[in-house]
Image (spheres, helix red, strand yellow):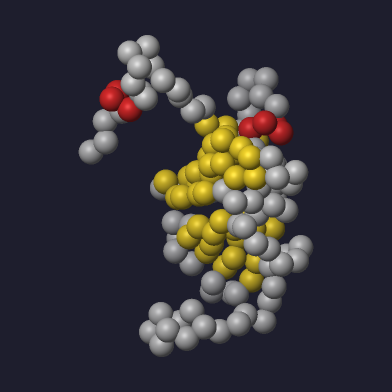
Length: 139
């Protein structure tokens, strides 16, 4: 969309590997590129759209090497219906459905500088029955 004229223009290119739905798209910190994650993205790639060249790149990703971590558990399998947001140079992905329509409550971080995935531990209720948020300051 052209934000000055509010007119949509169809690009002459298509996303690699065919059409997509139930995906997430995030503006990267450089503001001219968007990260796209969908059900076709395995543990080894995401798509990046460059608005300056109007082209897609299949960006390779890898699991962050932390001890004996299993690479397949440090990155999301192909997901759809998930949520995502940017946190500085990190993309946070949460939930969604896998290719068998099984629902997930897992969370993952993707470092968009090193393109390394990390699984996020979600903390549950603490000993005093709270949800644990009372210990996390938020300015």
